[in-house]
Length: 109
Image 1 (cartoon, rainbow, N blue to C red):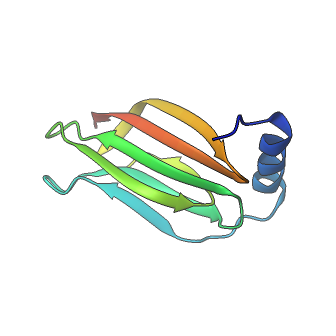
Image 2 (image 1 turned 180 degrees about the vertical axis):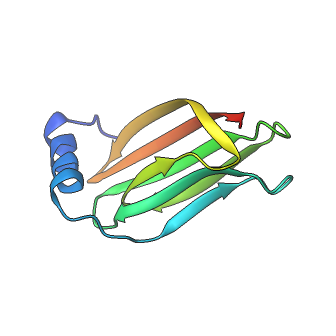
C-alpha cells in the first residue's frame, strides 16, 4: 500500500465535484437478522478510482454488517430505520486506486 498524496485526492474530488452526477443506482446495507436498512449508498461516479467497504452495527440486534467493493464515488445516506451518529474512515492507496474502509455507528430512529 502506498501513502495517499494530495494530488491524487484533489483529482478524485475534482471529478466528483465538477463532473455531472451519474445515477448508477442505490445499494443498501441491510441487516439480514431484522431486515433494517442501515445505510443508503447512492453510486454517482463509477469511473472514479475508489473501492469502498462499508460496515455498520445494527442498533436493533447489535450485529455487524458489511458491504464490500463499492466501486466509484457515492453519497452515503441515512434511512427510515436509522440515523448515523458517527462515521469513521480509513483511507489507503493501492497503485492507482483509493481504498476506503468506513465504519458507521447507527442509532434507532
